[in-house]
Length: 195
Length: 181
Picture 1 (cartoon, rainbow over the protein chains, first blue to last red):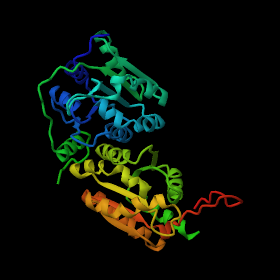
Picture 2 (picture 1 turned 180 degrees about the vertical axis):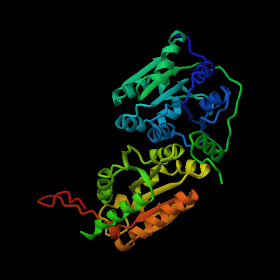
Picture 3 (picture 1 turned 135 degrees about the vertical axis):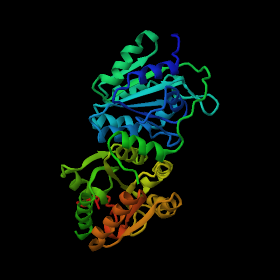
Picture 4 (picture 1 turned 30 degrees about the vertical axis):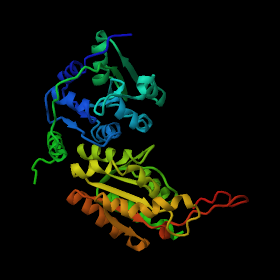
């Protein structure tokens, strides 16, 4: 059994290499992790819409093929959005990367086990859907390679990172989705003059 | 068959509105619209595995500056209800084109419950409803719905009534086996 990773450290190291990439966080702990790494106009945080993070990332990636799009989400949210692995693979979205922060539990609702606790392998599911690159990140020594995969390799990419369940300080991102939408579109050169 | 002519007017309206993305879970009544959009180099067609992907996909596309619409059968509306909350809370424009089942000459009773619930469910989620019943109105109805959605960041649904799109016929054997429409 390998030592599980620190999710906050992993996300902080990812965001430190942000560049022009856009980050979309699924609801719950991944959104708090991304906020803890420092809020930014290139971030969008979901507070609901469970199961939609992968599809939303695909929409953004298709609209902006000039940008890397990285979706960070939890194992529970990913399991609810499994259909999108097929859709993403079919669309061959080369600029889309998915990072599943897998603690094998529904962290916001009491820590009930998810299917990954029973061994369901999301990386293998993505591989069999047709993703050209998938990776199970389980050791700190492999973090750099995983970040390169997420940020630089032709996608779609899925990295399933086994993270620990230690409680983390709650860091909340903006709750207002309209605010988040307008600032991200403004960062992309859309909505230059908000009404 | 005149029942399919609305697709030509609908595609023209999508082009006028600058739509660059058609997401869909197919329906027999949508086949011609999907074909027309697939043949249009300005529109990317994304086949979804589940209608629930649609509102999230369109929200992401809007974030990146692309206007999209989601086309599905009435039964698919039941699959996407919670995801409408994303469009509502983010004031993301959302356009649904829904081919109705279970309301006009339906031969499959399994289509009836969700078909009957569609207007109530969409209304409850804050989606503005447009009804398309006659081919000659298709362009105007689509223009109105698309204009409201993209111009005022609203959620709209164009319900293509089964009287227009046609009831699917079931034939057990012989030349008409399966009956496609």
